[in-house]
Every structure is written in C-alpha cells, then in structure tokens.
Length: 175
Image 1 (tube, rainbow, N blue to C red):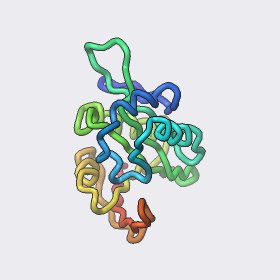
Image 2: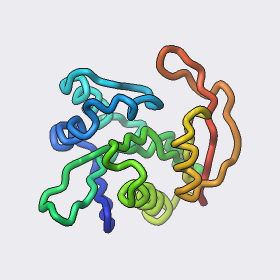
Image 3: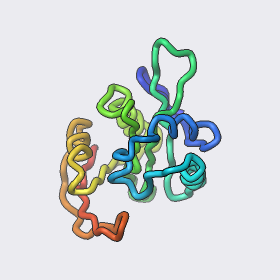
C-alpha cells in the first residue's frame, strides 16, 4: 500500500475495488480509447478483466483510491500498473493507467504517479522509471511532461493494439 495526502494505492483486488471502479467509468467509454482492453458493456465482463489483472505475474496493478475529506470510506476510481519489469537492469514502466473522469488532471492523479515513482526508486532501488504512450495520445503525452518525465524517442511499430492497429510509442523516462 502507498499512502499520500490525496490518494491511496492498494494492490488491485477485483472483489474489493471492482464495483467502485465500474461505477466510476461506466458510461465513460473514452477512458478506454488508448488502453488494450475495454470498453465494457457489462460489469461482469469488466470484473473478469480485473481478476486477470489481479493475478498477472508480469505486471503489478494498483487500485487508485482518491481521498475525499468529507467521506469516511474511500472508493477506487481507477488503476495503474508497474510493468515490463526488468529487475536485473533496474528498469520498469508505469502503464495501463486508467484514470476515471473523477481522477483526470487532479492532485490525486499527480500524486499517484509520484507515489509509484517513489516506490520504484526508494523501495525497489530501481534506476529508471519509464512512461510509454501511443504517439497519437495527446493527453498522455501532456501528462507525461506535466509529471516531469523527459521525452526520449519513438519506438516505431512498437506493438499492436485494438483492431490490429500498429502503435508507435513515445518513450519518456524519469531518473
């Protein structure tokens, strides 16, 4: 668990966080535009995807719970993962970031990326923290720069996304 002033991050658990995230994103199909999955028409399909993320051994997913001073309990409103983990070289990527409209461009979103970076550098002792995004994803590009990542280059034909579309990825890093 990572706890900040504006947000708390917990290991993603479909049973614990799924319904709240579903409520935060249902009807907001645009949050799925740049992700490899979604949008989902049924909550059960969404929960099934979260269960797969929860047990994914290649990535570590975290539920994002923004803190609201007026509320006692916190509800998850998105998730993010640490992925492409290369422990021998001390490198990993933050990705699969799904911020509900409630989280987008907020202090909680900024603190989410900060807490994950702090965990990567101070707890894990890694030396490099990467952010990759589709070259067409302008909001993610701007977010990477706002969060202090440095543009490094382009991976051409980096991966295939939905509908077999090749993706050119912009690479950013933080040190």
